[in-house]
Length: 283
Image 1 (cartoon, rainbow, N blue to C red):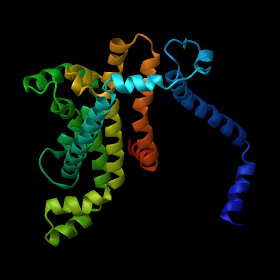
Image 2 (image 1 turned 90 degrees about the vertical axis):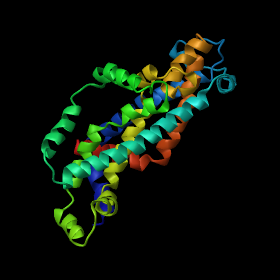
Image 3 (image 1 turned 180 degrees about the vertical axis):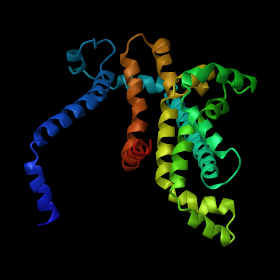
Image 4 (image 1 turned 180 degrees about the horizontal axis):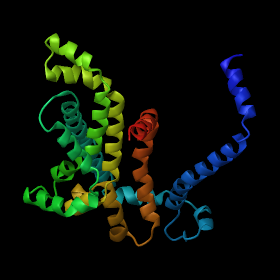
């Protein structure tokens, strides 16, 4: 019996197949409904009511809101700021976490275990508890209202160090010792042998870091004063107070802001799913 025949036979024998399909369709509806709500409300004219669910999906519709938002706000600048901060934060996080994890996993020095416990303890501290000390430190360094002030506090990622260390621990020490006997330096060992083996873990940490930076609101809201440095999560609430009292235009801004995220998800769907499953298994 072929694999396809076995798969078809197992599906016929599964008594829970229909409930599973119904549950999957229901969950799909729950996830897609807010997106359709956002799109339909963003297309409503500002003069039209859009308070009840029935009004959301009834015509008339117009693209004037999109023209007003693009021409009357700095939304593309906010998207660029979010993208720039996210990319730089992700690159620096990957470099620092991989180097720290390699040292903790494959290099022998005093207090190595105590240092690893220190990284684990970093997970226990809520981010909100660090906001005030962080603000004072960045302020003392004269980095408030700068890109550096946005990026530097975000590159400390103890979870990334822990994930990569557990991954590097799986690399056989015989491989490391053989390379060292052949005269391989620590830098070449890290760059040419260990790092290529850690691509799945690096992809997972990179994706999660970029998503976290893209959605981060609290720290950019506190650290940035100039509107030219606003990131997208900070710019969207300001749009409501500065340009309109209705929530139709903010919905239009959200729809425009979702386009880069949707494109990124469609391009890197497999890597995102693998990354989330990898960190779920390792965590």
